[in-house]
Image 1 (cartoon, helix red, strand yellow):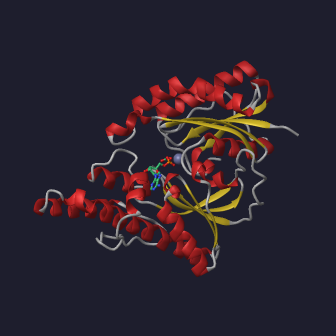
Image 2 (cartoon, rainbow, N blue to C red; image 1 turned 180 degrees about the vertical axis):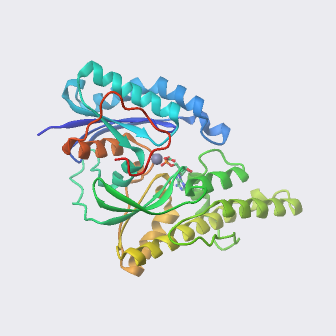
Image 3 (tube, helix red, strand yellow; image 1 turned 90 degrees about the horizontal axis):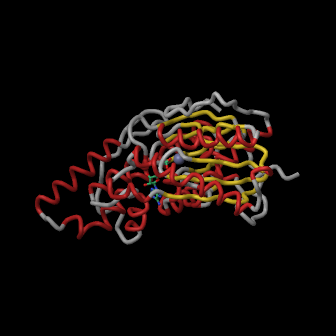
Length: 343
Ligand code: KG4
Ligand code: ZN
C-alpha cells in the first residue's frame, strides 16, 4: 500500500523536504544556505529568513519530484527540535498550516533521532535496505552534537557517552577558522588532509572519563601551536596547510575511534553506525573500515548525502511514528533544546 510521509527539516541552515513511502525515498530536496559562509558560522537571524524564502519551493519540489500531490500524503512529519529556534519556527509553523489546510495529521520528530535512522533509508530507485539488526551503537557526530547512542529499536535510544564541551564538527570548523577557511571547514580539512602527513604535528588529546568526549582543549592546542609558528614564519599556514589539516583530522579521528572502541568493549555490541555531518569525512570512514577488519566489527556507513541535515531522515522517523500512531496536535511548539528521550 502507498503510504506517503512528507518530511520537513529546518533546524539549522538547510531547508529540506522529502517524501518517503515505507522505507523508500521518493524525493529529497535540500536547499543549503550559502549566505553563512563568509560569517564563519551560522547566523540565526539570516537562517530564519532564508528558511522563509525557501520552504515553499522546497516542499513543492519534493511533492513534484515524488510525483504526488498533497492529497496523496498520509502525514506531515517535521523537525520539532533541537536546533535554532527561529529556524525551527519556520518549519513547524509551515507544517501546522499545511495540516490545517489539508486535514493531514502532524508528527513532530526529534532531529537527532533522524540522524540515527539515516542509514536505514533506501535511496530513490534503490532496492530495500537490508533489515536492521538491533541493538547497534551509533556515533552521532555533527556541528552541534557528538554522542554515542545505543539503539535498541527504531524508536528506542539511549545515550551512553557525549561531549562535555564542543562537538566534533565544531572542532573542525573552529580550527578551520584559525587557518582562514570559511564555514563549514570540515569538508575543506578533509580534502586537504589527503595530501598531508597526519604525523607532522601533535596536538593535545583529552583525558575524559567513561565514554564522554571533549574537543575544546584540542581547539586551544591547535590555536596556540599555529600562533607560535606564525611568529617565526608568517607563511607557516600556507606552507603547512596540508600537514596541519591531516594532523588535526587524525587527532579528531583518534579521539572518536578510541571512545568507540571503549564503547564496544563496555557494551559488547560490535555493530556500529556513524551519522551526522562529520560522518561524511573520508579519513574517518576509511579508518573505521580498518578498525572493523581488525576488531571484527560490523560497520554500516550511511550514504554521504544522508549524513548531513536532510528531510529524508525526518520522514523516515515520521514513518515509524505513523505506524505506531504517534501523532501530535496543533498545540506542538518547537524547542531549541529538547530532551533526547523526547521521541
Ligand atoms: O549534521 P550537520 O549537517 O549539521 C548539524 O550540525 O546538525 O553537520 C555539519 C557539520 C559541520 O561542522 C561540518 O564542518 C561537518 O559537519 N562536516 C564535516 C565534513 N562534512 C561536513 N566534517 C569533517 N569532514 C567532512 N567531510
Ligand atoms: Zn543535524
